[in-house]
Length: 129
Image (cartoon, rainbow, N blue to C red; front, side):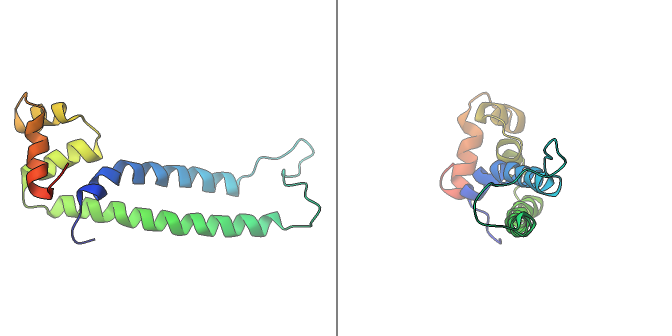
């Protein structure tokens, strides 16, 4: 990801949250809830099935998705590290990585009590915020 877009930045926190939920789901797959008789709970369908094979396939799909999401997060992180405009980098970190409001970012990074100050710097760089 050479050029990060505003949409990539807006999606950053959601990417991180999805990675966390995938990790949690993988943990559930590897440590299934056991029923009182000691057997893991499964479906009661009429067709015989292999819950282990289903779990392995699902875990593989989740790991693939997690890897794609992690690659996006790392690309955005790398872009922020390499960004030459330090004010823009600080604004993007505060707003999109840390989730602060535009008013907080404007005051903290730009020293302005006008909430549009930081947003306008982003708009000038990307074309929209």
